[in-house]
Image (cartoon, rainbow, N blue to C red; front, side, top):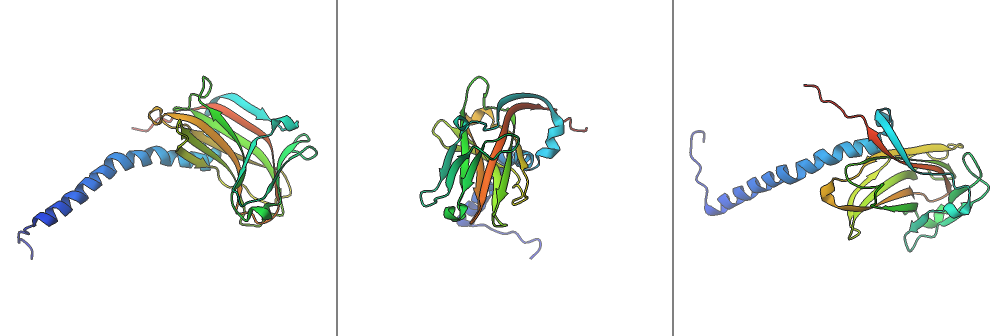
Length: 228
């Protein structure tokens, strides 16, 4: 009834206090986290929107895999049996590329080439922005297969700090395609120690994929000025 005082018992008071404190914790801890991560997810998925804001670039790696010495590390699950090979004849601009074959043996699970970088003078891994791109060629993949660039930030204990993924590339285009991502490192408070960049194929039950001509740069983006 309107105008009638509601008397709460001790149990109800504790329940109300619990929900109030939970809400306050969400506001204090979760919302700032989302405010930090959501723009990063948007940047990773839509690099074309941010490339125009690059004002400087320091190239850290530019590799065409022209020799077998430039191989990356590989990863797949214990029960997956895709084959990783260096293809010395096939490539994007020049001969030589990284190849993943017999994807039906991976049973749709993730398989990837990867390269790991550790914190140093060039990669301070705190409040920095980066650009990465690679060219790929695919054939015989099922239409649901995905090709992505994934970046994984980890701390000194090798625990994940932040993970971002590019927009999936189109498959079976009968030509070389470019896949790219723009991303930022975590804040200084997260004590990031390493970065892994993955050339990832998942959901594939058939086919082959080649990767070539990778580029990894540290960039500076034009600062956005919020309108008053």
